[in-house]
Amino acid sequence: MDRSLLQRHKIGETIMGGVNIYCGSFVGNDKSGTKFEIVLNEVVAQDGSDKTRQIVLGVMESINDAEDHILISPEDAEELIFPLTEYLQRLRDDISTFDMREYCAIDLLKACEVAVEEREPIALVW
Image 1 (cartoon, rainbow, N blue to C red):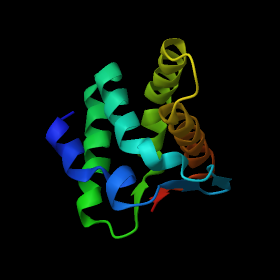
Image 2: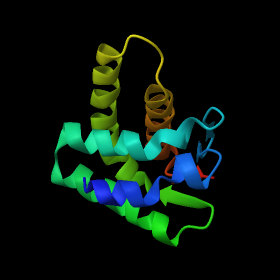
Image 3: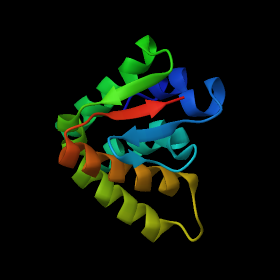
């Protein structure tokens, strides 16, 4: 992932007070999506597949046109389930205490699962 792209945005940390995750019947924990850019960047670094990279780049680029939210399609959410699951497991293996990335990855993964099940987009709202 292009680090300059991530550095240009920093949505969850500087522009907003936090990011919330919604999808259909799922409502994430308060501000659980705040680290979504870091999590998605790390997912790409770990997974390395072109499809995952393309989806994450699309999400990051959509931030440029966003006013208060971005959407992730159910189709893209489905493609993110496996790499997010692998990322979350590796993160849990590497950290000894709770980390905000884990908080985000848990809710983002659940939102992806709900997106597939309910055929609803994921909304990352600030």
